[in-house]
Image 1 (cartoon, helix red, strand yellow):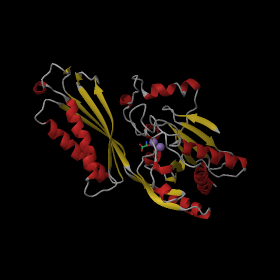
Image 2 (image 1 turned 30 degrees about the vertical axis):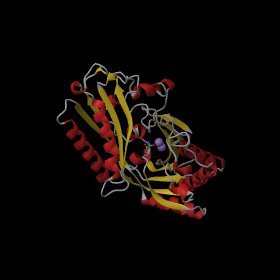
Image 3 (image 1 turned 45 degrees about the horizontal axis):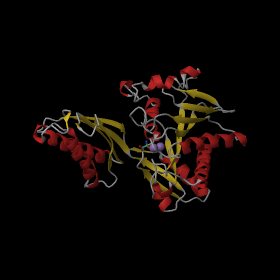
Length: 357
Ligand code: HGY
Ligand code: MN
Ligand code: MN
C-alpha cells in the first residue's frame, strides 16, 4: 500500500491495485486510547480494515475503487485535551491550534512532526472519498446482553466538553477562619453533583448523559486552601436539545452559586461533535451482508462518539459494532471475543466489496 501521513499525524494506507476509479473507500478507526483504557477501542477497526485489505489482496479480488486504511490520531483527546482531533483536522474543521498542547506545552502539530515530516512522510493529498466504514466495539451492553452478533449503527450521540474553572484565594488551612476563606472547592463539589442531578432528571430525554470526568485542584495540597479548581464535564445525547438542556441548566446553577460569593467562575463549552445520523444506504448494505451470513444484527445508536461522527458531516458513513463483554469499555477489563471480531470483519469485508467493486 502507499503509506501517507497528514500534518497532524493521521496515518493512511492506500490499496489501489488495478483500480480504475479515483474515489476511495475509506476504512479504519483510531489507535490512541484513554488512560487506563482497554485494548479493543479503536484498534479493532484499524486491524479489521487491514485484514480486509490483506484478504482482498490474497484472493486477488479486482476492485474498481481504491481502499484507504486510516488510523486517526487523538480520537480520545487524552494527550491534547480535545476528542476527535485527528478526524476534525481531516475534515478541515480546526480553526485555532493554539489550545491543543500536551502537558509539556508542546503543540499537537509540533508533536506530530516527530512521526511524520522527520520521517519524510508523503502527504495524503485530496483523493476524493466515496464512502467511509468503521468497525468498532460497542462499548455498551446491548449486543452482549441480547446475544446479538452485529450492531448496525443508525446514529451517533453528540458530545460537548465543558471546562469549568473556579478561582478563589489560596491560604493556610489551619490559621484561616472559615468566614475569611475564598475556597472554590466546595462550590466545585456542588457543581459536580449537579451534573448528575440534571442528567438523571431531564424530563424529555433518557439518552442524555453527563460526566464530570476530571478535576484539577491547584495547588492540590492537603493543608492549603485551593486557589483554583478546574472541572471537565462530558455531555452527550442523541439530540442537541438534550445536550443544550444540561449545558444551560448547569451554567445557570453555577452562576447562581457564586452570585454572592467572591469566587470567580469561568465556563468554556467546546461543541466537539453534533448528534449525527449515518448513511441509510450503507446501513442497508451492512444489514444485508449480516443477513447473508446468517448473523443476528440490530439497528442501534452509539452513545460513544467516533471519528465517524465528524466524517459523516462530509461523507457517506457506516459503522459496524461488535459486542463488548459485559458492556465494559474505557477500562482494562474492556474485551470482545475474537470470533465476534472475525464476524464483524467479514461483514466489513462484504460491505467494502459492495462499495468498491
Ligand atoms: O469518548 C468517546 O466516546 C470516544 O471513546 N472517544
Ligand atoms: Mn474511546
Ligand atoms: Mn473509540
